[in-house]
Length: 211
Image (cartoon, rainbow, N blue to C red; front, side):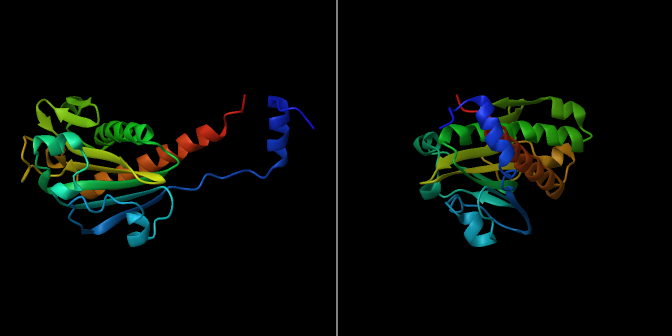
């Protein structure tokens, strides 16, 4: 039996058909969908929209998270209200990822938000004031987004949403209206870039040789 070595592994790989990474399934809704936390559930994207496997669902709607669906223990302990009249939302489900990996994707999504705004907004000075603290983005004391990651039996789920306007939130906020970017334009680009990042990360893991 041949020993396992980088050379032998490469020879095997050359004999095999090229393995293609399954694409991240994406959809941006063209109708209003209000979010109360219940949709942060395994296979929501698949059962409701046919998005099988790693998936990203984008939509615009109000946010008013019911206490029974609140996933952040700190928010529950502090009795916080998570609400806004209109937000641009992402619901992400990823497989073969632990909670640490999902939390890392949250932070990557926050960074991608800044990249998208840098490309779409002509309010460059305002964009440059955005700062990330954990998975949250702030412009001074004004909060731009909300986010949470939770595990399921065989996947992890992320809800990430940014303010579109600044109505109905319990804290001081900044929204897409301040950056003069439409919610549909922002969502389309953010969903595209996040899907590309997830696929790129998976490809990177498949190239690593065993030792």
